[in-house]
Image (cartoon, rainbow, N blue to C red; front, side):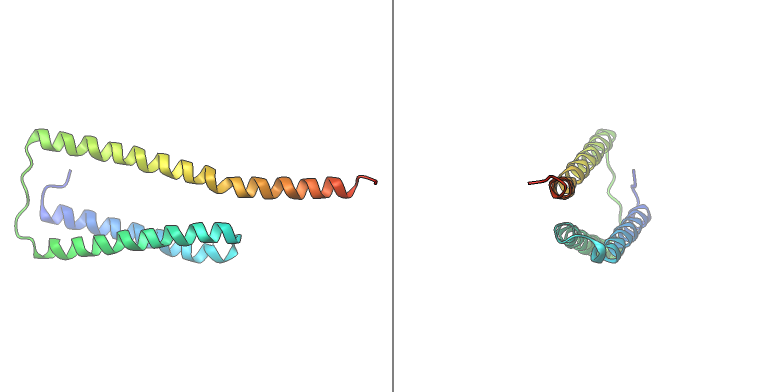
Length: 123
């Protein structure tokens, strides 16, 4: 758990770098996607951009900060617990979004299969 300004600056920089890379990757991949998928990716990019802005503001506060907050052991335990719960929630949300994103692709494939099969059925 980071407890110094330098630790927090490093964590903030690492987070910014990770989110920037993810947003850049999604921007590079979105043009080859179906319309529904592009809309979802654009929404994710907008969310990432907002999170990046928050981290940039945080970085500026860290630059101005001169002291680190001292957490007592109970607070550190609670922060660790909350961080782990947040990680679980983020993973579950990502899994749900993956399932929801796959539904249009499955439906599209089913329609195409049906069209091909029906095209071979004699009237």
